[in-house]
Length: 555
Image 1 (cartoon, rainbow, N blue to C red):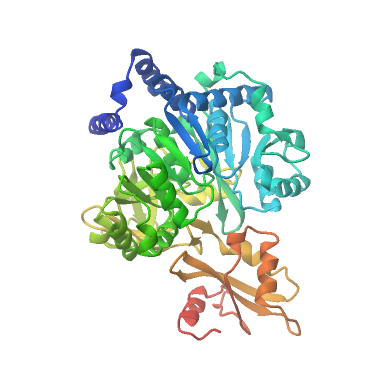
Image 2: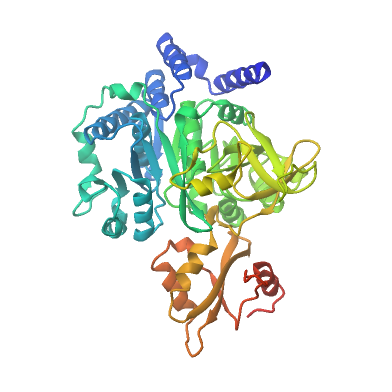
């Protein structure tokens, strides 16, 4: 314990000095910092408050490709307004607030204000359809919803499908203009900006992110900030050259777990978050050059699209000020790691983590290519175990199911005790990944225990898509699996058995899926078979299907 505390102190001082925070450490700020550490305050509002004291006019966030900019003081003012608004709406500690927004300043404001009043921020993917949104609102019991005005039609569908939630149209606020809903800016305008809500000084909230499930509906992974420790975060920050005046490009959706975690870290050190709403490889390079970004976190698919740009296109933009790049959320191939480093230099880091576990391991520049396939070594504050199917720990070099324990773990899956219990063993949590560890403490992913597909950094579970397709009148049987894809990592392939005497085209089935599910859940190719291969117990042999496809035995 003493050594862990000593290591934490050493890492904290390193991060503090690298970010130049010691230069602004006036008595009031030092007092605020110590009080936050003692009282274990979490969420982004305490960080924003300290930044507003230390450097009020410095940029906190850049949006709309530079068209919108907020200083630390302005961001704090808007967060203060929203905390008062939430209080007037009756939102209390432990209540849940739905957030259905694309990457924007408002997303960061809502996240900060929700946790400041002690509530739980329920992240909802902006690509989901109405019925998918309705399930999350129902399951979470969200009392208020903030949404992007462009998604109003899906919100209308969701509200019409809600049965149990206390949410109604009067408690849904649109960012942007749309008919029939209250406006976000009007909500803020009625509240004071110069004083934080008293409750916000002590309240600690949390976050809930819904992950797809193999047995049907998505599961809400709930994390209480009051229980979170800073050790993994501080040790993680100490691993890479987080510098003074950090300008970080937020490329991944903030409704995922990784992007808001990195945005929060940048707030911790008083840096600037540069938000990207829609990913376009050349536009991202242009934004890096224009805003003099010093860092970025992307999924492997995004890096793949950047390195495949023509060299002449890449050289049009000066990215020399980049100090570090982070890859995560999906497996990174060694070949791609080499290509990234050949373009940007030896500044690539690769982390492993999950919505349920938080940050677990990190590979430093050069380690991924020197040790092909590694996800690195454990971040401070993490423990890991590898179990076989009998529940015994496996020896060094042997593959087992990876279980993790740290201060960032989820409390469990909301209203799903069975799934929570299935994910735990001896106080550790697993998300179904199979891995092994070498003698030097480096971990390597071997496979996934479930059928989950990761396409472009997004987790997709086939069961939900299969259940949609079998509802089509021409479909008798179907299996969905992921197959290797150069750009996306994996793409969805559907193997379909049609009912006798019926017909259906690939386009027809694709549109059938798209009508009810998010676009990224739509299979990119369809293969029609007379029957699916199954074992004696009736389980579809998906590995056999994949082999048939790779061998060219399936049209």
